Length: 194
Image 1 (tube, helix red, strand yellow):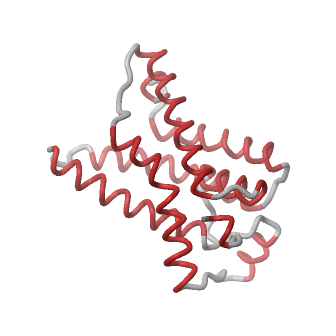
Image 2 (cartoon, helix red, strand yellow; image 1 turned 60 degrees about the vertical axis):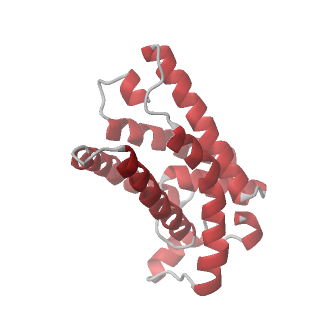
């Protein structure tokens, strides 16, 4: 929404700024600084550029109500499994997921509750920013609201019922293990993620 309200920077650049603000918030809220935060910043910059590339690439997809529904379902299934995967492995997280994970671990909040609360807060802030800047709300539809309510639940379900049950995630290198060992463990107790 900020990219609509303040279009002098593109969507990917605003996403990088948003994610960097979340790293700062994560440090303030958890009162710690770890190596994974530095890696998260690198991932954020790459992600911002990738967002701009994908936005341009996907702009030409055919559009219809039926296809929009297919896009939403496919995107959400990939999102649920992707976030679950990142939560259980030693790959640096984007700050948004890092923030949620570390708040869950630090304050012993259920993941699905924290994720849903965070997503709804972001949607509300987006709507306010967009309305104040443009006098209307754009790109916040039913799919966005459904996503905010179900993502935390499905990520927690996939993490505990699929990944924790059938897979064991271990770092590929000793360097990855050492860099992330001082961090809140990527594999938090099952009760923390449910």
